[in-house]
Length: 392
Ligand SMILES: Cc1ncc(COP(=O)(O)O)c(C=O)c1O
Image 1 (cartoon, protein in one colour):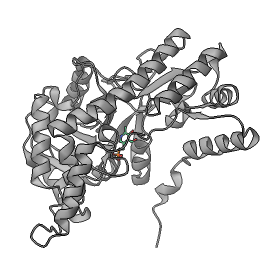
Image 2: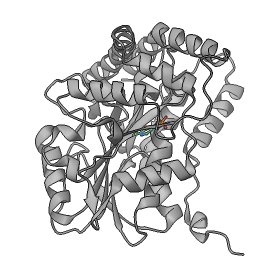
Image 3: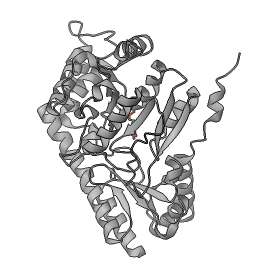
């Protein structure tokens, strides 16, 4: 028996544990100081009333013989898949409900989708980015190359025709940088993928945070994307489902490689290895897309986006270079005075008692940068920004 040796090649993911360790040590030494966390990637507002009501009703249904449901379809109930098609039709994207797969969140599907791709594919991953893309490919032993995010390209790298990639990850709005691709930029990625027979794995977990209506919220708003892209979406940040768990993945019927439908392969994979999402949760997810649900989550998102505006406004005032915060809940700043990410972390903790996330934890291009998130409470954001101003 041999283990999968590739697991030993994974870099220790010490980012958040080291943050917690440092914060706890500081608090122990300085018990009277109030530390404000602006580093969290989790939501703080609870589920909206429309979702709670729908789930309570579904719980009651599960307790009645006449409405009880056992195993459901692994790819999700038709009522939810159709609701999502309707949501996409408002984005001017036409989908069939058999192209929609309900998941327990984007992270699982982003990792699991790799089952349907050959190990010999070369993977192109933006740097910096959500670490799950790298780690899932390291676990599988795939060759990884990087697309560099830099100040010069506003952390929105574009394709390089001289590089051959088979699987391309794109994350827009991006975690951690908050950068969002515009239509022309996504067109260049779709054109590259079509030309090179590559598949784009498009992570749109933060699409509902896009405020500028000229920016694409789905890769399928780009012509030809249905022939080269899979889209991953999540209700985690959109509707506070981080603990409730629901997302969805779109695999178009037009996506064919080696004369084979990737939709068919993914359906086979899911019906074999996935049990589906609980009926109660899918009812809650359906309610997110109801008129009441959409209105209620819009208010929550507006709350977070007001936080983001306060943060980016303060950084502007302080002349600190940053991206994000306008169409995403993350703000990505260049550490002042050429500090490293961890130096700036320590500096902010010691001098302002504000906690953020060191950019170096998201890839080597993240060194010297820092992520702030807008998911905190308003009063804490205001107080943290006042403390930042006083540092000057
Ligand atoms: C870019 C990105 N994709 C996916 C996820 C995972 O989402 P989910 O909670 O649906 O698994 C996250 C969570 O932080 C994320 O930042």
